[in-house]
Length: 186
Image 1 (spheres, one colour):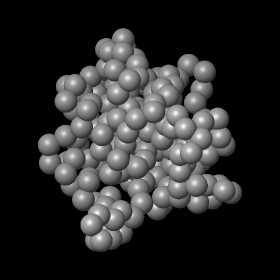
Image 2: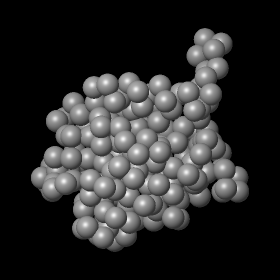
Image 3: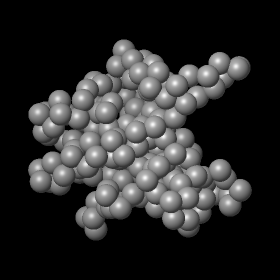
């Protein structure tokens, strides 16, 4: 795929159960990160544009990703290299109030591969926004992680929350595939 960028969203320490003192552990974050790393490695080999997006809340009172904390750091397995773009965001949507779109447009990107967390929040937001901006979106569902969710007294397990959002995104916003399928495209 020509004119492609990999966007890695929020695979930060606070989401990993394997990190001591992680503040917001997600379901299967380690598995998602392993799959994201496979895609990242292939993109590095093929010299594909890579953008690491990291969320930091602006308040020390935030439940996770507090400013300058270990929890807000990108997981060491996915550490950005010097030539890879990095975007700091303070909102759910990685395009809002950041230079993400400018980074993509400056490199003439038309296709984006999206991986990261949380499926029903930041992954949903960035995928919909990228699609609305006209990018062809490829979402590696097994390289994304999420948590249980509750609304109005109804609890939904992470697995079902993940499947629900992936189904919705595959309907109109993205080519939702496995990491292996995306690796084959590269």
